[in-house]
Amino acid sequence: MRRLALLLCLLATVAQAAPRSGYDDAGPQVRAMQDDDDANPGFLWVQQGAALWSRPDGSASKSCADCHGDASTLRGVAARYPAFDAKLRRPVTLAQRINLCRTDHQAAPALAPESDALLGLTALVGLQSRGLPIAVDAGGPNRPFVEAGEHFFRTRQGQLNLSCANCHEERAGHRLGGALIPEGHANGYPQYRLEWQTMGSLARRLRACLIGVRAEPLAPDAPDAVALELYLAVRARGLTVETPAVRP
Image (cartoon, rainbow, N blue to C red; front, side, top):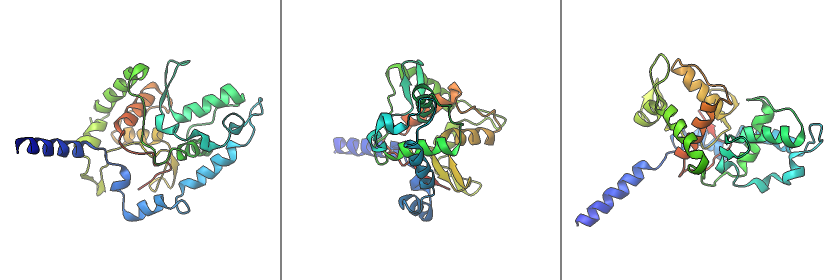
């Protein structure tokens, strides 16, 4: 009986520790919008990404398809980002990888953060991994960056003196101003947020959180921002990719 009680206790602990997607905290209308590809507004950006995928660009006059073929060949890629770049000796986000491909292989200018073009291409690539488990590497050369991201996640910020963990771990499931506080897992970006009435990146959401606690927002490509995105991806392991997600 003692062994059975211990086993039940361990199973309960694992169940409690399992990450909860923001999808599960959304209302039925939001979930239905995400589930229906014809109603999901994020697919407007996916369609833009699909058009750009086959369009030659830059002085090299090459398209994404020239190197990768159909976008479906990238199934599983988004589930592994942010990923370590050996040449740069640091992790890069999926959006950064797309821009590196543009500058290095297409000889084209990098796309602006939050531009429809970059969001569209990122959403297109992310869609190929929809339903796959997040599989970001937390070890090897990524380890110090994961640790830096977790440090940022747990450090109090701004005039309100709050950390990410204060809201998304300690108070997750509670309400703030009538809104449910989610666990804050980044498994559906870029995503369409009803409060924005548009598509947005994880970097945009992080800036909004920092502004909300009256802290200095991070630039999209700032090292702290990338490290935080990496840690959030590690923290979300156990969930699947939902790109393009819909959230309130």
